[in-house]
Image (cartoon, rainbow, N blue to C red):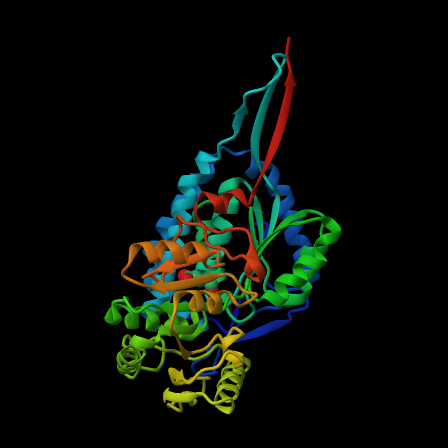
Length: 481
Ligand SMILES: O=CCCCC(=O)O
């Protein structure tokens, strides 16, 4: 499936390596075996890519929305034709189970479709003037060159979620995928190329993350950076982009609570909690990180959940029956272990799991773990774990549950399980989060605004809101006779 070396830099319509011939080896996180080598680009390649994107902006920005739409729509069709192959590539480089990988590819395609449709719907405004001799217009115009920095946990859908609205709006792109997972990015760019994207509109630079990111940050021509990743890096981008007053769209860390009320459907609640926590092995920014269960249903919830967790199959992502793949790398595994050790030291009890998984592969596998006897001072209740550990704490009244859920600097996603509509509305309104799932743990869809508040980010991805990020509203004031 892969050559020993893969050309991974795409600038102005040409695939190439770097002049220095420097490469980066990409590993399969399940086996720790090398998959291929990609080009190790840096500042030079990023500057070239920015130049190409700036030049292409003239053409792309002036095309009609309908013309841009046709290319995005074609890319959507091409992506759907290749779900199986792209899913396999994604699993091989990222580790997630093939059923999730194929689901991600379909999700990635859905952003291309949605923004193909939105491309011709960037409306302006005619503002009624209070002065008879004036006419006031608002014209939406593309921001310009966009630097897109994407994460390893969703190597396909986080790319299309960013670049589809940017392209629909008329922006051009320099894409930097996560160093761990450049192969899905290469495939997506090839699809855009086959769909007829003009040269220079989408450019890809793999390699030295810091050098590429800093070149984007210090470039005057890059008008907006869209980033998904940690809050720490998001803060760095905010600080360093101040000199050029760059626009930023940031999807950062989360620490999602699930509140299980006493009127919840427990069978549904346990299925959903499990899906939220263990999808992508807990490596999702909207994964539940802490569960608050009403005291009166704690036992039944924990029993049912544990039974379901114990049926999860850990293994190689390409095996159809695998539910949990490996963690992405050693650092991720160490963090999970640190959170677990800290919790145990502070009095947590292991209900199930609690250790590394030693199968026949070299990767960083971990048993799906459920913990009880949880206290607020544990690391796991305060920091993003990004791994398959679920701490269960109890509460006795709605007010306390809300206080606990809101007691964090993060504000990405929160979930509540209840069968009472008024409670669902009341609690949703009080949760200090950008996204609330009510009896639903899969809120990320192309047509809705995804994004956090507080230290979980700025801006929205998805829906018409997602395209607004890439448009400037130019105000034209006309004096008339
Ligand atoms: O990690 C953040 C993106 C979540 C995407 C999804 O839930 O599909």
